[in-house]
Length: 94
Ligand code: SF4
Ligand code: SF4
Image (cartoon, rainbow, N blue to C red):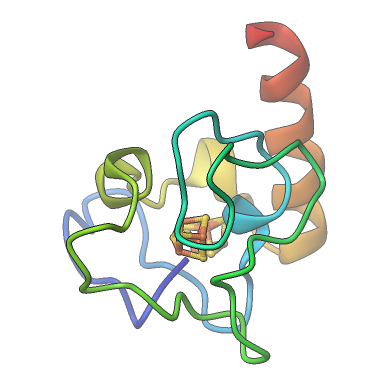
């Protein structure tokens, strides 16, 4: 998701090169380039090759993305762990 996201770091800082939260979850709100949102497991089209958000500061970045805060419960200690944790959350909430 990030660009060394340092907001609300009481839990953890966003991990560079991760991007799991831009792939693993479904997003129902409109994303530039994905007007119907995205399905779980699909790369967001706004995720660049370095796993950073191309529209991080843009006003049309989905509010759900801007509100998401890195935390150990969701992000785990690796991208692989985050993919599993987020997929599990996805199943529990959908
Ligand atoms: S899953 Fe967590 S660590 Fe990975 S990009 Fe998203 S916020 Fe950052
Ligand atoms: S819009 Fe940006 S922050 Fe949101 S899922 Fe896509 S790449 Fe990630």
